[in-house]
Amino acid sequence: MSLVTSAPVELNRWWKQLRFRLQNKKGWNEVLDETFLLQTKLVNDIPLFYAAKTNSVGSVRNLLTYASTDVFERGALGETALHVAVMNENLEAAVALMDGAPELVNEPMTSEFFQGCTKTSVDTLSCKHGC
Image 1 (cartoon, rainbow, N blue to C red):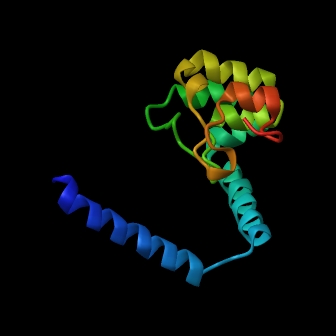
Image 2 (image 1 turned 60 degrees about the horizontal axis):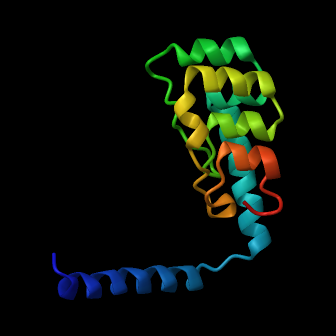
């Protein structure tokens, strides 16, 4: 598709997104509350996340042995299980995740709240002061 034909399509898509956001506008606090409630629910519902949150090293290692465990699964904030372990200051679970899935170390959080934060920046700055 050429630039001439793709530009109007992209502009139309952006315009529709902007209109939707303006019509369904929520306050920032409401957006934050909903997102963090969803994040809490997902952390408790995803077994690998729950094991990372509770620092259950045996469960982390056991879950990593199953092909059905998606180590790249994301929570509501775009976090991985490694981010969950680090945000909860669970060193042992974080080490077990890095041993079992070292590729997680360079995975950034994908939420706009923590755009671009990797495990290292979450650990260093706790993403409270920007990353």
